[in-house]
Length: 107
Length: 120
Image 1: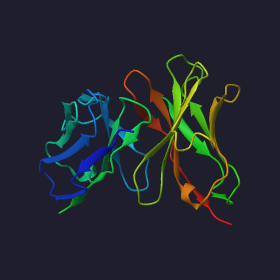
Image 2: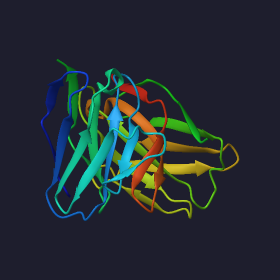
Image 3: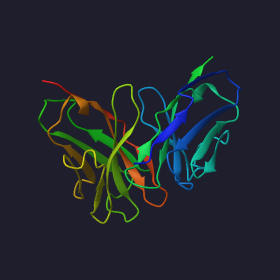
């Protein structure tokens, strides 16, 4: 199975800050990576797929990059509605696996 | 706009079968571009993939659950379902249904989630 390691596990930030979350795969997955946002008590929401393609309706302050084993999700200017937990998911091979999550908290 | 609505019991006894249903609206469950999946999230933990039902009728399950899980589609009701047999407390989780995109491997949209507790 491909293991997905996210860092940090949590980050405290203020509105307007730039936030970067990292996801590392245990083996190369090309660009077969998705990012999700999950707010407390809600289902995850797709933000980015194929490492860098923004899902329709997602604000442009979200961006993704990377290939192979190392990926990043960047929020260019954190907004109040962005406080949530973020997960990466590899789609290169089965079983599909998710990272452990990064919780973005209010500083 | 595709929407998924989950239903099913929130409490299941140990050794019994967990059964959940996901009703699809805003689109046909038999559309060639639509495939369906289940994901679960133990309380306070991350996401675990359970399995996928492909439009052509084939399935793909997480090997860790394969011996106990079945995902099926009921075209007459525009629904798909999850059955997990012989449950234990370790199966306590929020269960989500979602549409699966085979071209890029992502899940979207998701159902609202159902907390299933395994307890006597």
